[in-house]
Amino acid sequence: MDITTLNDRHLYQGTVTVLDDAHPAGRLELPNRTVRFGPAGWLTVTSGDGEDDPIEMYPLHRVLLVDGLTEVSRGGEPGDG
Image (cartoon, rainbow, N blue to C red):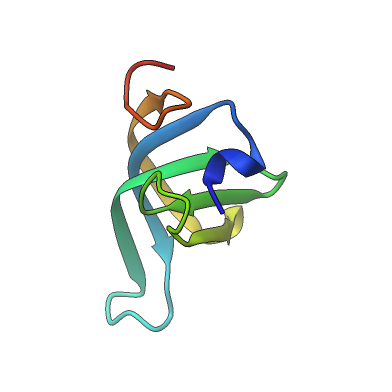
């Protein structure tokens, strides 16, 4: 599934840091991710813009930081959106 299937507007690329109990530091940094704020209370994250890339959803209370955001066009290229 493509992340734009969930919402074809307001896609961003950036670095996401989340709480992760399985990680030794208790947090996990996810660089160069395509992100969407939503559905309500969640952050939707994927590692790329391909249809086969897995989509992960993190509840906002587990999101520590979203940094370096740039808007992504519908075609998946930063800066055209």
